[in-house]
Amino acid sequence: MNHLKKQDPKIYQAIKNEEKRQREGIELIASENYASPAVREALGSVFTNKYSEGYPGKRYYGGQEFTDVVETLAIERAKKLFKAEHINVQPHSGAPANMIAYNAVLKPGDKILGMNLSHGGHLTHGYPATFSAEIYNFIGYKTEADGKIDYDKLEKLAMKEKPKLILAGFSAYTRQLNYRKFSAIAKKTKAISMIDIAHIAGLIAGKAISNPIPYFDIVTTTTHKTLRGPRGGMIMCKEKYAKAIDKASFPGFQGGPHMNNIAAKAVAFGEALKPSFRKYAVQIIKNAKTLEKELRKYGFKIMFGKTDNHMILIDVFGSKGVAGKEAETALNKAGITVNKNVIPDDPRSPIDPSGIRIGTPAATTRGMKEREMEIIAGWINEALENRGDEKMLKRMRREVKALCKKFPIY
Ligand SMILES: Cc1ncc(COP(=O)(O)O)c(C=O)c1O
Image (cartoon, rainbow, N blue to C red; front, side, top):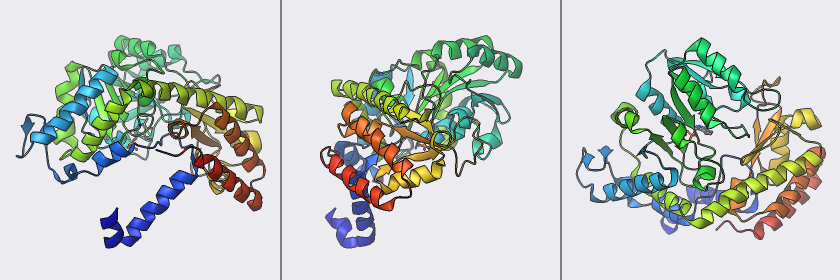
């Protein structure tokens, strides 16, 4: 980064500091990961200079010989990974991907059945403060006390509400969904079925969990979480919806695609097609299960019964009397990054909820395994039990740094 260092030392320094923070701390934010140097090279490439509105072979500007190469490769590789009939790799991120998908098949005021936010759903699945909730009429479904979705109840709700679209998918839910049941309910109620796999896309690509794509009409995702690509979105769908999705993406919602990003997506999909990615995806879940088992030993209350994926939602207030915000701050001081999170029907506020959400994709990328998860669980417990002890948190930060040194990011 010689040019940047000379030209803009303030930004250069901030990047260097962030690099150090990422290197020396344990990243447990479930939606984060470390993209490879090759992905970041493509992201920082000259494709950022190029306008390429339209799709391969059908662009509005000239000079598209090479943009077509990368976009076509990104689509082909994603098709190999996910076995989807049609793929659009242009959505800038996960939230726009969802807006595009809604816009492709719905009219303003149409009804969507989505997972309630405090039960694990994402903001774009119906949270009142979002733009999508201003346009569409969202009805939320919830999980049961055992952490599962009651599909008979969901069917009854769908029969009563007659939504145009039934949406599966989540940001903080930890159990395996029954794709078949979602699909059957949508068929029975003549709704379009959609799933947002933003969190679990890498686990699906790595075959660590089953592939929902055959069961759903439309599938949206991000590319930067478990899939370990650049920040970005993607939409997969049945051929029947291909034209509507492409039109809703461009010119419907977005302008020029971010071709540097699409090149980086293609690189990441290439990485995910390698056998080593399968091992990675399996290890992510092993690590999450180990972390969960250890945290349970320390008396932490695990939400939704258990984890089947890469994340764990913990009721830290209910288990240790520590609010989510305080837990996040204490762990941050110790060099462990997590995010505060609401738990189902949280009695506390979203700015200071009862829970924290933790995930293993980033730590697994560094090569950490079960033994390291045991150590981390011990640290989480110690940091939260002694959260006022600044000296101890400082000491822990040194220990965290020492462990991280043994597991370089790339
Ligand atoms: C399930 C789900 N969908 C969509 C999004 C939004 O993605 P982005 O932040 O890239 O817009 C997220 C991000 O957290 C998510 O978890």
